[in-house]
Image 1: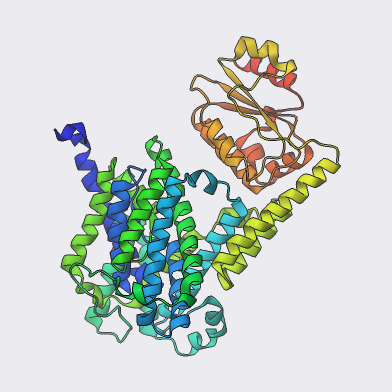
Image 2 (image 1 turned 30 degrees about the horizontal axis):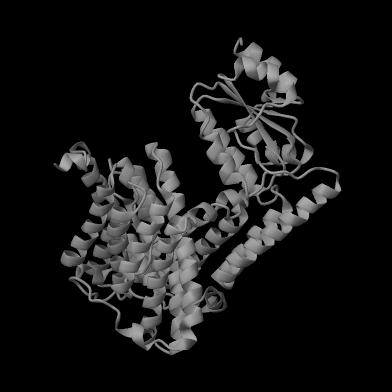
Length: 551
């Protein structure tokens, strides 16, 4: 009977993948809980609830979900804002719980309203600047705990208080934190069988315990099943309603983006296709359940998902096992976690902060369109030292305004600004008819019409993936593409990489000055597309293909 719903052949891989993903998630859940300001136990509660319920109800079979860096940073900002409004953490808990709960409910609503189809239109510079800002926030806020000191609650206050860091640091805590970072980076060179984060957490915590060093530790955390945290929901002041709505919306949007990006990675690894709307519903259910037990919200965790798949996980059973493992840890080992030094958790979070920073975006900062570079830097600075919510709003508004300005300039230059045409039903142009009729089963011709910008990149990438497997070459006609932005550049780069893996040769024709310059500036030409595969017109491309493939 069970075989009707589950292939038992996947059981061993699902159990192994789920257990390994759980082992990877454990130290990070504790660290993110501390970072949030609600304590290590809140991170563990969140990891359990989101891990189990997102796996059961989500739309990505191999997704491992739990607290993530971006979600924790927003949660921490909410905790600070709620305490400022009410005066204490205890008084603020009703606001915090309701915000987390509403964020989960909004994700469920997003799933039913097909909001996933719109989230993918976020411009690359906005996402890059925001994620890099989140990475910097994690690093900056862990500087003081890394040195055994209490940390100011905002990045700006940390920067102002830096002199204290150099005069009052605890050298014992600093040594433990440095040892944690060392093991985190070095241990994978010895073996990748055991997650380095777990090795660092266990080894350095045991070292600290036996040395009896005077360093700040997590302290006592509850063990056993958590109680419902809904008492404070009935005593929330109306002054907090705007704060709740504001942060709940950000958590819902950010959690959705974070999860769907991880789902795409899982698809690429397993050659499957996730259900975006169901994924948002599953994540929303997980975050809502986590909220009522006092857990911090989470999303699809890239590292846990990759580990799960590489360890054999193939169905949603693996994600469920990952959450159940953390539940077993809560029930059996909760008291031991009390002795973990805070500098060890900081030593785990700082490398994660560096990983979140988008080095690719910074690498190309001087060569991408200046408007994109400006948006990225602005969003980065506002995210890091200002408001996370305002950063995203300002970035989206500015990206749209700058694109409209560029589109207006193109029109004034006498060029038409059209939309992106699709493969389905796309008729060959007059100068292609003869070649198309003869070789349409071996060569695809793609017409790009108008600027290749953030609004069309997702559509472009999805259509590239639909190219039949028997196709030998794709010709992309760029005759009518006057402009390409940073999102368009990376979309084209990813599409070419996907086609290369399938053995499809990509040819570009009639490149205009701006697109050609930008493709060269980030080394798509000649690293991905050799200059011998770029032609002034379509006729020369046809002649080349006839010779190359003896058509």
